[in-house]
Amino acid sequence: MIYLLAVLHALVDAACAAKLYSAAGNLSLLQISTWFLLYNLLAFSTQGIIGGVLDAVVQRQTRFSAQVFRKIHGRPNLYVVFAVAGAFIVALGAAIPFPLPVGVCLVGLGNSLFHAGGGGYTLSVSEGMASGIGLFVGPGSLGLVLGILFPQMRLLFVLALIIAGIAAAVMITIRENTRRQNNINIPEDISTDPFFLFRAGGISIQKQVMFSPWVRILVAGMLCLAVAFRAFGGSFPSYPWKTGTAMILTAALFVMAGKIAGGFAYDLFGASKTIVVSSCLAAVIITLFSGNAPASLAGITALNIAMPVTLALLYRTLSRYPAFSFGLAASVLFPGSLLGTMAAGALKKEPAWTKSGLFICCSLAALIFVLISCVMIARADKKKEDFT
Image (cartoon, rainbow, N blue to C red; front, top):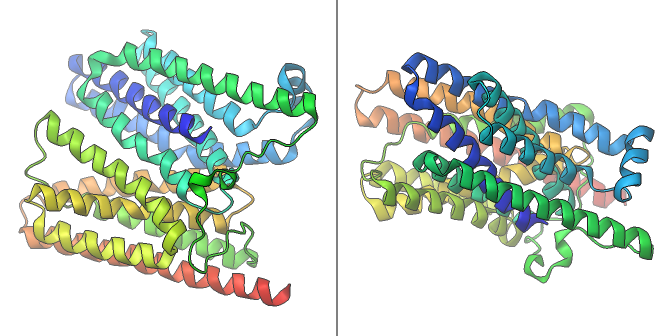
């Protein structure tokens, strides 16, 4: 299911981007900025709220929802149900020529719903490992670039999105029907797949970490600050070579590769080693060699390794709330990126070393926040082992 959700992720982002960019041709700069801002607010800033609501629904399994879904096909995984519903809402908003405000709202909210559901499902079944979440988030960057570069293919993206969404719905239906009819437990977590049999050196895959409520909030806050600083600092580097369709697509592929590699690196080497190596490599390479395409691509890959690591740590901190954990990171990502873009524009005429210095400082701040979180999680794990 995670592989299919990864494909859906690429198609959802491609359809959303194609919808916005295909409509931008007849708009003024102010109108374009307004609708893009509205879309990003709906697509990113609502994910934490939607994720929290989704977690509450899944945990409580209200009498109404249980009865309704049982009549259809047993009790399905509601995270997948929400993700597929979000994908179909995106398809509706992207395919039908609604007035632009309606279309933007549909694709924005559908995007948020899909990410909260898909991210919640992936984190909840991954048993504390990051390979799955890396696979899920990685294709999104490629889909976004495809939608921006080829907005005329919007209906093709929508058609593929509908087909993949139907496939996901059929898959979850068959799984739940089989489970109900045979009264067996079909494992959903990816740790049963030999492809994912990794154990990080010294890192427990137990999801529940024994924190006091205030310490839990503190750790989650530091991880969110790490996401925000990374998004803010990532707006400053410029890549002169990143022109033309081929190079833009190549950069997107390396972004995707970095996110996928980050999940596997976390599972193999642990969070601390992965985040230190990736952050240091990214800071050095991007600062010194941003004008060199091969070196910059390596730096971009290293920079994006940190994303699944942070998501996995955030979920370990808020282990009862997978969709909220995923959505919370997305909610702080947008304001960080927006402020970074504004700051980069204001510093356009400043010397290159000024922007490089800001990038390094932000990378260092994000690294420190993640390392402190790793230490606090490790201490909580040790207390749990001593207690047991």
